[in-house]
Length: 456
Image (cartoon, rainbow, N blue to C red; front, side, top):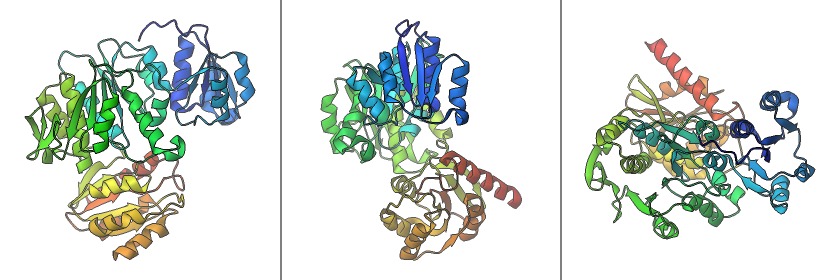
């Protein structure tokens, strides 16, 4: 980390805590800033705020008082999820206070090389693969995964030095709040319609994603999905050297799927069917990661080693184990229809689907063709169980309702046959029964392990 004096005695407001806010506040305090944190959660129930107060940080909780901004702050570090329509953010901008997100703060004190990864889908898998591949390089520094992957980057940059690489997953929310962040390698996995309630329009969403390349030069690289025609036009907005990848044989691509092989610049690296993670989308993620790894000097042997042993990011079509001839996958992160669509398309084998969760009163109709095509039977739970059962009824497949993920596991095995896939892909958030999708996924994994031990 750079010995940065830019923040010494500077009045900074950290708006919203969670992991990234706590980490940003601690870094700023370490750098000598006069830090105030403001979080909506009441102080008595706010362990993060209590801990920061003990460290000497000024803490204001329970509400977002706009008048607080009259105290002469020169910088606001905003939680990425807080929209720019928030009264605190609006007032900060009216007062000329610079508003950034946590990755921008981290970059300003980092002397590491940065790889930035964004996209509508595949960000976490691609980020993870790149980090694993870069850590296989001989004679190179360490690669650190960070960002939207769930690891605050302001913590990582305090460990990463000039010889190291920060591989940072960047959400559209984060990217709106950057100013000077400059990845040497940027990756855009894909762009679909997402987060329009936050961004206001698809055009704004795309504009946010493209901020990942706004500070790049021709000495940098921008890896893009060349199978999407929109990317060909967006590439013209970047000054970086464009490195296209293609699963479908798009002309000009450098990372390709060719005759069943994953290739870079025409050189065969590995057969695609040797990937441990299923689905066409994961072929694309692997191609993007291969491009970043090759541009960073990683050997083919190291890339192959990573792809042979990588079984998926936890809770994202994660291979769990094979029990009684059934392959079991945990896709608890599928908190909406779009994510479950990706999961159902990832398999050619018949699927017994475990699905259900928080009812956001959104339609499930887009799943029907995939349920008809791929699903043998369904086990449902949670508030959306009736919606999932309606799909099963329309598809003409059997279904069973149960209490939760744990009780769903033995029912799924009973409804399956050897050679089938048992897939937890809820198509709904977890909050009707679980604190988060991680807890839901962990309960599923534990239940599968217990079932396997009993069969033992």
